[in-house]
Amino acid sequence: MGTSVIAVGEKSVIFIDCQGKTPEHIEEISKTLEEARALISSSPEKSAYVITDMTNSSFNPEIVSMFNDFTKVNTKYVKESVLVGLSDQHKVLVSVFQKLHKREFHIVDTLDEAKAYLESVE
Image 1 (tube, rainbow, N blue to C red):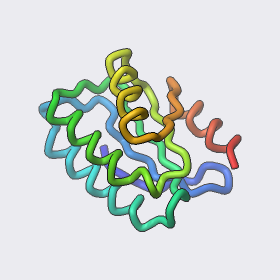
Image 2: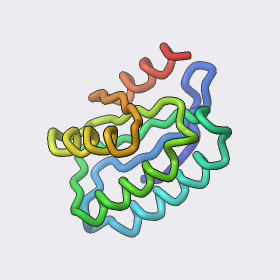
Image 3: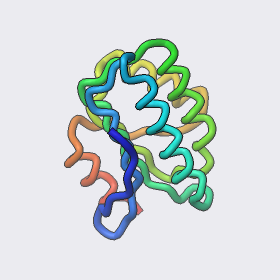
């Protein structure tokens, strides 16, 4: 788990790794989101490419609130955001976040699909 910058084609992408995280990992999730927030907010507006991998993760209301706040703060900096490995429950939450924050998320099943999508966009 953590935040890093990865190369996807010619793009630098902020990778947020939340794979396998559960409510027992709340402090680790909080630290990862803070790291990501710092990287994203240092980007010019509408320029950051972001992949968030949530494969095999489960969240409680407190973590959902953390992600909601994270999304709200970072929306103005993000050009493209791809979410990987969402459960059906997560997909419902994402649809709510999209409406609340007037932001689109591309949802895929694998990291390779996320990378392929980001390589295909301008």
